[in-house]
Length: 482
Image (cartoon, rainbow, N blue to C red):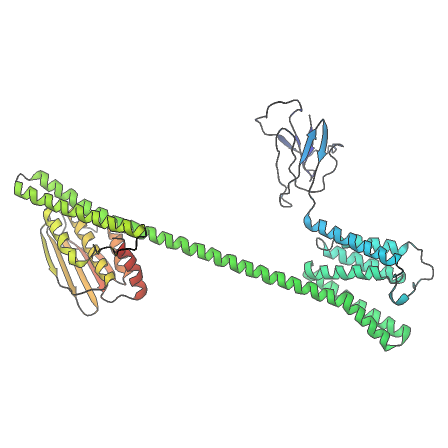
């Protein structure tokens, strides 16, 4: 049995025996850690998340303390082999610290240990002290981006010791990189602490230079060094930090804009779907309802002349429905070669009236209108069509009255029919038909009301004769879909 443990040391898993020839179907058993020791063949895994893998299958789990990192631990010949992935930031920090350590050793070897050829403040300083100070400073520097607070505190402590042993150029160079890292990666409190420490260092360095030499040129040189090794890295790190914040804000703004565009596109698609559903309902429901009623009337009559008239009306309704469906298909397919004919217009209201009469419903119509805006023309036709369909379906054989009047600013439509005998004089249920009529009216800036009064159903609409461009654009799209 081969054991493999999660890097965080919270779980362990038992894999299948090495002699297994087929892939097991059951999942590996994962149990909480109970204080058992880590198998010596696997060793200690440094990262809290891993994916151990034997040659039979892959076992995966994640730790909530970090993002998943792929690591493979395999079994070959009875010996466990472990591969792990170090965090990229940690790897970069270690590489930077090693580079600075090598640079410091090169300065020591080249006899560039102290500033201005200075000597240690303490008379007896072992030869190894500067090397140890450099090593400690670089060790703290390896936490420059992951824990900048610890890196700052450790380097400041090393610099206090180094001041009595030099101070050395290498340690100051390491501290300059830590200052840059704190300005770029540190928290607000850490950056404030760094600012206070830098002011103290500058004050102590300037005071020591003036008291030690009394020459203003030496003091000026010290201030230039402080500026180059402390102020400049801090300013540069702060500038990069602000640039990253601005870039993050721009990315967030771009993402928000993209999400808004996606939502607008989804809303437009939903609107188009609702519009298409409304158009299909107007085309299919209206014509098919009329055809159903007309054929029912044809089956009940024995007069061949009446039956022939009904069948001709049914054919005309079928041809109209096919024409409107063809127009809709051409528009949906993106065919722009030829403008589709206008099948939904007030000029064709007489066909609606003929179809209703053929279905057995007497119609008295008063149509008084002149040329209308395309959007209003289409909306008026669809409202009258749906109102006639509702009357013939819910009150078959009853008389239908249609009154259309126009003035300078609006078009008035009223369609009434009696409530069938034996039914309750109440508002009909607001199904797709009534909803579509209201949407038709509102799409051009009009209003529609459905009411029951004195035993009669009444559909009344007020539509503007002049439609705004934005509304007309929407209505024009609706017109083409008929």
